[in-house]
Picture 1 (spheres, helix red, strand yellow):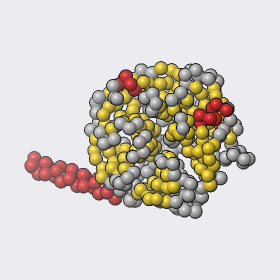
Picture 2: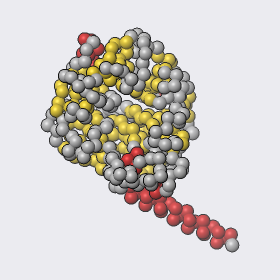
Picture 3: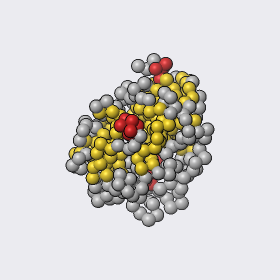
Picture 4: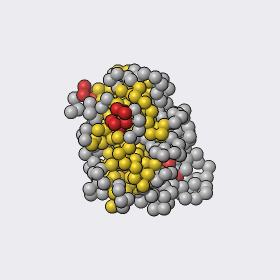
Length: 373
């Protein structure tokens, strides 16, 4: 009898593992490797950053500048402060419908330097423009300075799916993320998200990177539309060779090799796989809520908390960061002394900045003390 029970349990395990692998293959366009959840937790102590005047929004940091994408600003999208002095440097990139004004602009996804100046590329979807923003010159002159404003048609080709993450590569190439979009009135099915490599000045498609094979369906009574299930927060490796995605609804990061197109997923062991999306999803958790990276490591802000609905704002702010290398190994877990919603990595000084939204405070963590470098 005991042997029969063991044999039954063996077959159940084999069938369960097989079903999980089949679900992974059904949805994901690459190999998925399981990662051991390390017990190596390092507690980090922060320094509070004091800034002159009011600040709010989503921070991006480069060297001595912290730039907030602030939806509450009445006439601009970004406010800039000097991290060394705390000085308020001004508001930039005007809202509106006039010359060099735009009805919507995204967060900053990548800085680049050119002739010693800090710059970034922004996308104005409603005006169909790419903006090459010269941040250094803007701060010096206290007015917004664009090096170029480039006409960029997108709506017809991508069926009204505006680019989300955009990363400038060489002078005339970029990577753009085309998000998922619901196809049916009842939100039961959605398109697949993917990346494109495109030219900047001539708006030509170079290649697509297909991350998924099938979309996730949702039931009419679910709180989540199907275009949300494959959502992620993405970041590019500073050398421009790879993209990392931190999946929101699975404890999995995806690494995309830009040259080869190879996509590999790295999932924490004993966490849900893609077969979870075939259930009624009664206990949906948020996992990776923000992500940053340098050329050696990936810093993924980890939640692991249940989400009531896609519009819920009651979830606590995370305080754990998973540190992966670019081979997908979980090297360390960092425990922050202040919870945060947003993180930004300053590649120049190797300092991680966080934003405590509830307290409206900014903190810095010196990663050089970890002896990672």
